Structure formats: structure tokens, C-alpha cells
Amino acid sequence: MELAEKADCRLNSEGGENMTNEQEHRLEVILEDMNGKFDLLLEGHATIDRKMDRFLVQALENHREVMATIKTMHDSLASKLDSFEGEGGRPRSAYPRTGEKGRLIYPQ
Image 1 (cartoon, rainbow, N blue to C red):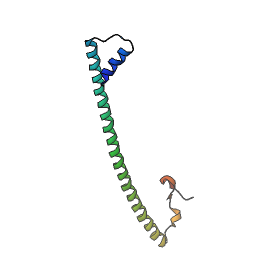
Image 2: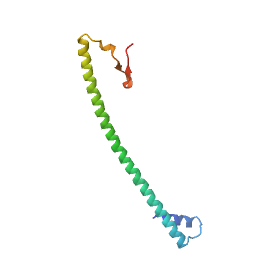
Image 3: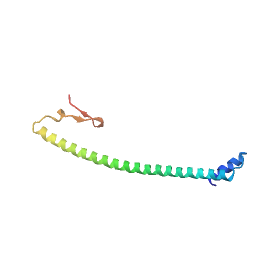
Image 4: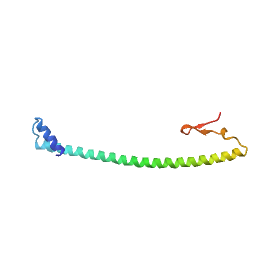
């Protein structure tokens, strides 16, 4: 049963006056328009949902790449500091290190 038919049955079952053909037609047009707008709204929501999923996947891939680059650079720097320390340079404890959440902790 279509929405317009349900509305017509409800009006008639509640003791309302019978709708004229013109009123019934107007109601059907309005309800069909509302259905179309709801369909567009749901389609837009689904599109945004798909775009957000693609963005999340891309953001995670970018994050992995950046973290891999940072780890490579950190390992390279650590090995350079080790060799520098072995040549009589400042001890590693004299350089800042990273703590929680990647913040630098400076030696005292």
C-alpha cells in the first residue's frame, strides 16, 4: 500500500471527511515529492559515507608511510650518534630523547 493510500485510509478511519479527488491528488503529489527528497537525502548520506571510508583508508596509509620514514630516520640518527659517541663526542644522554606522545625530553 502506498503512502498516499495509507494517509487516505487513516483519514477515513478516523471519521474525517472524505477527501475530494483534487485534495487526494495534491496529497499524492506532496507525498511523492517528499519520497523523492528522502531518496536524495539517503543517497547523499551513502555517498558521504563512502567518501569518508576512502579518506580513512588513505589517511591510515599515509600515517604508516610517515611512521616508517620517521623510524628509518630515527634509526639512522641513532647509529650516527652511537658512532659519534664512540669517537669521543658527547654521550648520547646529552641529547634530547622522545618521550610519551613523541614529545622531546631534554636532559637536565
